[in-house]
Amino acid sequence: MGSAEDVPEFLSGLLLDFNLTGNRRDIVGNRVINNRTFNDLTATEQYIIGKGFGILTDIETSPNGNLFVVSLPQGTIYEIFRR
Image 1 (cartoon, one colour):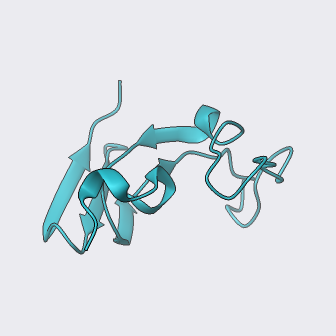
Image 2 (image 1 turned 180 degrees about the vertical axis):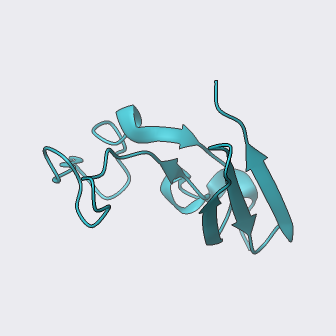
């Protein structure tokens, strides 16, 4: 079995940020991320706001605007604070 270093970054639980429309049913602007290969994240980098979460099972926004992110493999709930 491989080590954590062998896991491609895109499988390690990236959290991406996209601007949504007012009804939150669509992404504003260009919806195509054109990475050159399966393992290339060059076009995705601008959207990455968090890494290393593993499999995310739920993301919720709190009333104060912070995010709660549930990580399945880590058995942890993270609170992500606004800047």
